[in-house]
Length: 468
Image 1 (spheres, rainbow, N blue to C red):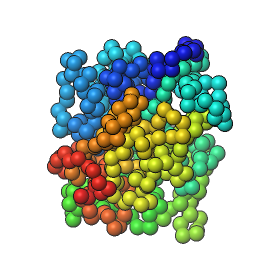
Image 2: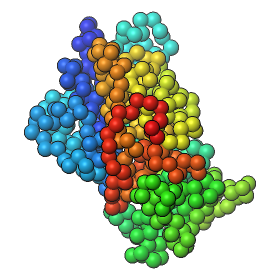
Image 3: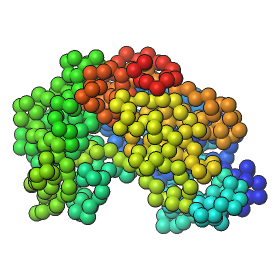
């Protein structure tokens, strides 16, 4: 498809980039408003990134993972909703929700798969040009099967997430050449340890990261070690004391969260796991089909040698490379939307507050361009799907002229958050000062047995604290 030259810009479609839960929710809202829409998904199916952690159980039950407008469309098609109290895996989210949603004819005709967006700009204008800029449509450049197509649209919503752009192992956030060369020995994210058992069984494995993602990876590796005693498990964290990661244990008001800390503490005390605290990774070096990790502990060089596999649970970051010609308003530290940063900055908010926000906080200098979903949070770790759904509702209300609806932002979340025994990331990155508190919003996930760790009590959050 080549560029279309539409005299009436209002007749042009809205472009959604990313076919995950938030991107598809955006399509549902646009269709409900009678808008034309194009959704570009780089993968070969909707929820392509979600399927990469398909075996992992989510942190929240179904009731918080289904967008209301999408649900209306699904119900009209005869869809049978899953048990809303259950915690779905990533694969279940795709198979029981995203795939049926994408099969609805109104949505399916808007969906373009295997379509990687490589550039977004303004028709006939580079980033510098200002004259008449707001009245000029966007141009989307899309690569598919080695062919580049151009699409003209009136608005762009980037819902590409961050999963495909992981942080490096190195503590300074920079991918070194040596780390890139060692990538065949590094897994970024949460591996399917059951499905990839041969890769890790009997091997020397280093887990990097101090969040609950890493804790659950360690617990799964410990299970693997029971079957394959030769498996050696190492854990590198930047925290000074591993106790900071345990949480409240038996004193935790959320019993399941406390159980995680107690379980990993037991493994450390029995020498099942070897820990490296205050470990700042400088670089990795591939040597004789193994990896040597070079780090600093209290100004002294410490090298961990002979590692077979590294699992990096250090989070991810946004990719802005295809947005070079868009006038963005990004916070310099968090890399979130600028107005959103103070609300979610993990340097300030130890408890992962999910303050209601919408179109106003998501605006960029480029009119009618928005980043929503996980990517809107930049490097902050406290994003919830329910937050993303409210974001797109507000943004699309604004784009379609419902300015009051865009302002009236509401967000329904559990009174004390939601989490699973499989993986809990309560209150963002836990600190000594907050680890015994029960206030919680969760993000990370894991594929162990799952139990809801709180009684779910929906509550409208309309203040600055998740502890209210």
